[in-house]
Amino acid sequence: MRLPGGGRVTYNSLVSTTLGAMYGPGSWRSLAQLPAGPGRGVAAGPGGRRLHAVRAAVADIGAVSGRPTRGRGTSQVFEGFYGVTCSETDNPATSEAWADAAAAADRCSPYSGRTWIWGSSICALWPAVDEDRFTGPYSPETAHSVLVVGTRFDPATRYQDAVSTAGILGSARLLTLEGWGHTSLFKSRCIDDYTADYLLHVRLPPRDASCRSDRVPFAG
Image (cartoon, rainbow, N blue to C red; front, side, top):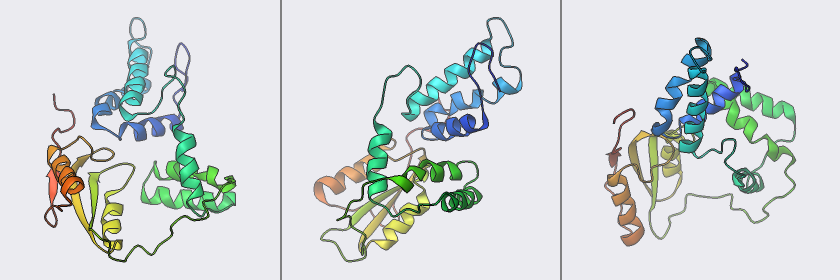
């Protein structure tokens, strides 16, 4: 859909914007304004108030999620991300393999599953490999138990993977944030205290420990 005054809203951009917004509840209020704009005539009202609201919402989502928006300068995030990701992993070299994996991921995680798969397809032709990367085993006991922190509703690093990682490691303790968004840092004083106690004194939280977020979505 073309927006009056320039710009377009496409299926892909809507999925991408939604995925970015899910990184932090602080952008959910702006996300909630998006579907109403294009569906009800974005430019309705003096000065195209809905169009302005849509553009402002996208900018707010980019700022809160950490994703760059137009006019915010150049970032090297993706170069660094794929420089590590592609050189540390084994990847298929055929487009068919990526297409099959994307379809499977979307069945498991509708809309955003294929986004993550195709986003890493650059690895198919990545020229560098880390020859001494560690590929396991991960089960031997470590000198100190590893603390694994997982957020229940994380859109980028699934809580299920935090559970499985804690199970794979030879000696690990899982700490759960009953909250939303990507990672747990600065979202719960309870989580921060447990993490600091582990890093400073190597003291683990109780088994099956969990903490709640200090803030809930849409509050205040």
